[in-house]
Image (tube, rainbow, N blue to C red; front, side, top):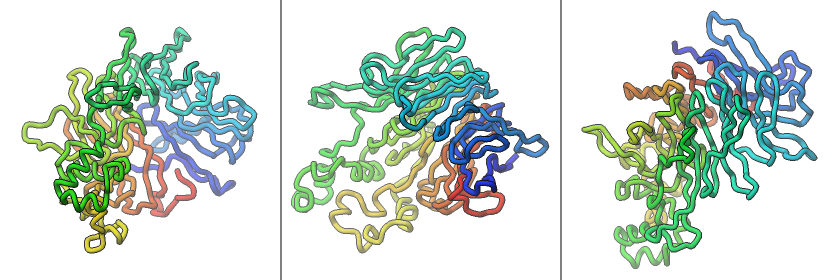
Length: 463
């Protein structure tokens, strides 16, 4: 308990052997990851491949098994693997040199047989169910629209799980038996109360597809909550007066996309959420039984709180948990209040946005270091198959004992609401990122710039 063990290592024969993109198999005893390492094979250090390493903990026997295709053409790289619990089935990105077409596709490996799942260039997500029966992935259809698909290995059939109205679907992740899959889908909203555009507004939102039902169901609705720069302009006028604001910003369009004032007024508690970060960056993660989904956004998406729990600020990307059985959403990370911003953001901010030097123009739009949220409660997250634990990485915002932009790993136990800080390097050059969690939530893994055994930087050879 509490052991940190290095899974991959720099090979002295090469001197620059990086590893990354880890996922966890065998109920926390093995790790599948991307690496330049070749171990005892005749492969090239200059290419990336996928390994399964077991036995890194005390009392175990260390083994390294090649998971990607051993017949690897020079210049071909494999990356971002996902695997069944025993790693007998994997999906991974393959990048090949010219003149190969496609150059970047998704490969399924099953019992030593490697099959391309896609026929056009794509790198927008794939996943394998815990039992290996199901592979889900994203690929453009014949109309050039990115869609999500489910491949059933028993019947060798492919099913499109995003519906015809989608403008873009990606980042699918599936449950233990493949019965439910969560993905991000973008549709056009033409509600005249929200937009006058004939093409409508588009949001990257979360959807769940359940086998046998035919149509996916939406679980995160962002419509009407996006950052509104016209409203931000009105708030600025209310705070500073029309003449002063107009002297710096002649119209709302001069605010750009309005992202900074939207974050500021959300942090101030004037608006319920900033509405600038959707689910499109990293997607969502689903539990083994398909009941729980976690994702990050800076929209106010929580629908329930504890009896004595105050509403939390949502100005930066926060972690949310959705219960598909109850239809309720909780906000897991908490930003506190705006008074914490100065202690967290100002020590590392530019001199031009500090007190005494920040211009009136910057202050009006909430750009000064004590106004604008600079941190990241979460960047990306995964939920364990048993649905009881979440691992996520961020910079600990708004806790001033953490360092802005220094990515650390955090574990959240859902039944007890217990948050545990797994790493704390206090140096933004020593990042821990791309975290994964075991099926039972008791093992987490990540890619790091820091050697925890020696206390030294491994920025040039991430492991």
